[in-house]
Amino acid sequence: MTVTIENQFLTAEFLEKGAELCHLVSKDSGFDYIWQADPQYWGRHAPVLFPFVGRLKDDQYQYEGKTYQMGQHGFARDCDFTVTAQTTNAVTFNLKDSPITRVNYPFAFSLDITYTLKDSQLTVAYHVANPAVKPLYFSIGGHPGFNVPMSAELSFEDYYLSYEPKKTRVQVPLAGPYSDLAHKTLAPTDTDLDLTHELFKNDAMIYELHHQNRFTLKSEKNYRAISLIVEDAPYVGIWSAYPKQAPYVCIEPWWGIADSVDSTGELTQKTGINRLNAGETFDRHYMIQVHQRRAF
Image (cartoon, rainbow, N blue to C red; front, top):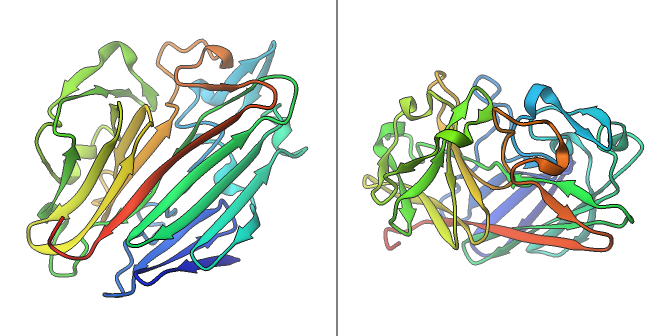
């Protein structure tokens, strides 16, 4: 099942499975900015990462003396959400814990994802609530994939990634699927980055963030561009499948990160983990902005 919202500029479509954004189409041009999940490269559009971001060490973690199994990025992307509210330009999806989720994630939770269109921008808002007495530990993040190139006559290499603000950022390398926190470096994100597929030969480029950041995919040869704006995520991942020469780039705001290479596996000690005590809530959001004219 799919759900559609729209305004005068954009139409957005979502899958109830995973509450996943699957289309973001300009009414002006008919162009769809969201990657179309071709399984030859990557069979998803914009999955929600919950209750973990990235890979757990040995695909498992420990909590209160027990070991639990969990695959990369958690289970929410494969769960059926319920639509709890919808208007012409907004929709809210909800997922709650169940006997199935509690087998490998022993926590009560309520996750709301609200998508709202305003002008040429889609806001993605996460609301996590802890309805239980014991603490809730989780990570959450977005994984939207954007079509690159954005015009048939252009190539992947005609595009570049623009960072705002223009400043260096701490980059977290990966060792296999794990975060290598001991070998952080300063990345030259004070300049634009020309896209090549070889940028992703070591998997995602991961940056630590502070305050508001804007990441824009654009070309000097075409007016279409896409920005992701986030105010308070501690990390962002930039990724495209390699060596497949994949025609998309993901810009992923994360409130969490993959286990470190020296992780103990103890959930309460996991880098980037979020904790909610009884009755507490967690609210975060990011924006996707479509640029359909040269002035940006």
